Length: 390
Image: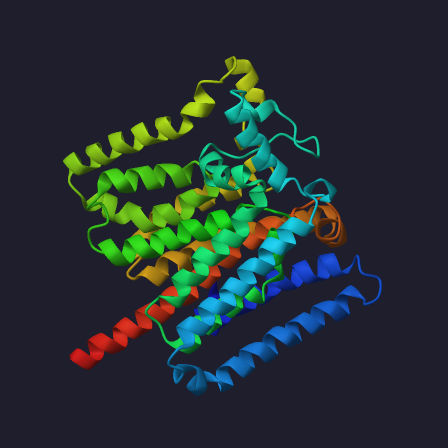
């Protein structure tokens, strides 16, 4: 972690962002025989560096634009339509990734009253999706393609950025972080729900923290419902949620703790009800459950450390950007250390270019990096305002 402090968090996170996306470029450009993958990777790094440099030069111009929000909305709507077209043009059955079919299996099984964790997807794997993803993916399943989740999430996220109380150049910068990320477009092409799941969670954290700062449990029933829902999407979300809520949960009264806990348990059971009513015998559930798949890549000791650290770091959270700062430390450390250990054990080439490690899991870090920058810009503006008033 020392290098992060030496470089400064923003610079270090930009390097992390470029490195993760460069791995995606290197892996998938390997399949294009026209240009060697290392050339493609270098070209990507030069492109990103050039765009960020140009953006910096245009800072004054961008901040002087009066109707930039309208321009950005129109631009994001065009990107939204483009992402929809990508989804429509890709046959999911031709993909070597089963994220979309795993979600489809979950939704279809629940609607048919079947236990979903024994049903095979199009790659003959069982789904690892938790019950919350059923509700997240259902509207898009009914629209005909669960892959539509990504374009609609982009639209929500882009509007959230555009209407954030930050400078024009900062809005453009945060949007560029999405549009310059091959890892994000891999998610769109693969019809994956992973990054969209993380983005929606982090948007909620940002919104709730700004609206109820200092009294996060004010609407405990609604908070319990939302927390229960997100915890039932992916186990990894416990990291940012713990950073976000634990320190304040410790400080509230026992009455409010108990009340929140009962609301939380009630909503978790309610959300899980479609799965619970289809449960087979215990022996079958032990063999076929989503948790076996969600933890298969990372060593168990790393997972344990990653689940303990948020409780400690939660007490160090002073401003909203700290949530995403420490979440990036923990989640980025978990993913990258796992990748490095796998490379040491099985070889770099087979892990990156083969199927020994799914590098798409590294893309989970990208939304945390993006939200860190967004919240940092918000916090900088607040600091300037308070210093001016003082």
